[in-house]
Length: 205
Image (cartoon, rainbow, N blue to C red; front, side):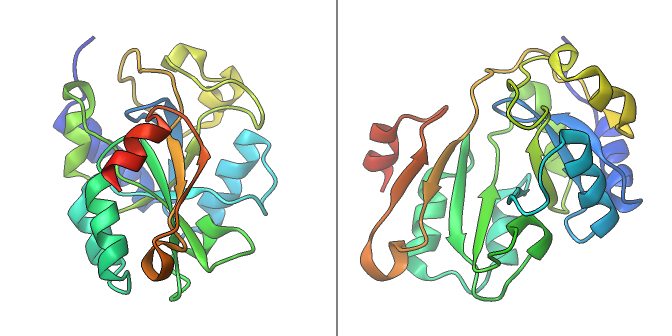
């Protein structure tokens, strides 16, 4: 499988800019992405998944530094945790006092899900995408995660505006770590154990 190219990354960025929805490879499974400030993009993404709009998604940055710059209100302890766990196959639930990226948050804008994937050689070109995206797994709600582009539901593939093929992915969803209480109390919880074992998270924190 050939790696994604600069042209692929440019097509992805253009798709986001015109409020499109893309299927793309991450470091875990295939995902759906749209512009995080686009109500129409988010509506279409949720409709493709047949997912209730009150369920939160996540915001994904292809560069960790851009995530840190976009969330200046994060405390030093939380920022250190972010640096310890990202980039990688982890979704961090972070305090969101500024209510940033509300379309990704669902009804509770005080919590934001954040992703910064590890860019493997096959998907490294996406590191050139500087804007964040609202993202969710490219499957029907409650369905199996897609390890290959061909495993993505045919209806999703037919309706998406862009398909990027990153070959075969690990196929295990990200580990979700709740850091909302980390700054004040050092408290954290693994909400879902996925690609990163809980013991690895504990060692990093």
